[in-house]
Length: 288
Image (cartoon, rainbow, N blue to C red; front, side, top):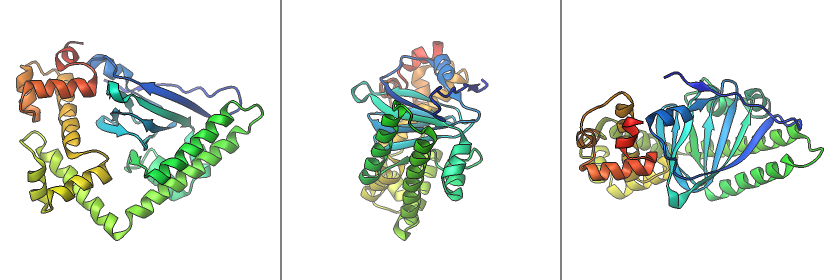
C-alpha cells in the first residue's frame, strides 16, 4: 500500500512552525484503518515529545514502545502513526512540525546530519534523562506561551527551540561516546540482533544473557537504559509487530497457529498482547 503523504499548512500568524498538544487513548482500529492512519510528510520534520503515558508507535514500518521523556523524530518521507496507548496510561505529547531548512539553519551540521536529515540512518527516538527532560519541558513551555503571544517573532522562537534541542541531542551523543557507554551501546546492538533472529523461539532473559555472556541482571539494565523498555516488553512488541505484518499480508490460518509462529506460547497471551498494543484483538484486525 503506497504511503499517504499529508500536507502541513502553517498558521497565518507568521510562525514557520506548527505546535500541537495531543492526548491519545487506545484506538479501536484494524489493519485497514491502521494503514489509513499511517502517513508521512514530504518536506517536513516532525518532533514528538512524549510528556507522559505509555503506548506504541509505528515509525518507518517498525513498531516501537514509547513512554515519558522520549523524543521521536519523524524525518521527511518516513511513514508513522500511533498504534495504541494503554487506557490506564494515555499518551500526552507535544508535536512540532517545521521545514528542514529551518533546522539546517539553526543546528550544527553534524547534529542535522545525524538526527534530522532524510538520508540519515540515525536513531528515530531518544530517551532523555531527568535533567534533559526538564530542559525540554522548559523549551516547549516557552514555545507554547509564544504561540499565542501577539507580535511574537515566530522565527526567533523556532531558532530558540531548535538550538535547545540540538544541545540536548549533542549531550546524548557525548554521553554515548564515553567508553562505558560505547561498550553498552555495542552490547545493546548485539541484544537487539539476537532478539531479531530468535524472537519467534522460546526466548528468555536467561537464554539471552547466556548468548552474550553477561548476567541476566546486566542485560535487563541495558534494555532499560539503552532500548527504553524491559526485555519482556521489547520481545512482545517485536512478536506483535510480526503478527501484524503476517495478518496484513493475508495470513488466513488459525490464530493459535499464528501465536505460536511469532513466539507466543498460548493464544490467550497472544490475544492479550495484541489487544494491548494494537487496540483490537487479532480476529478483528484480520477482518477489518
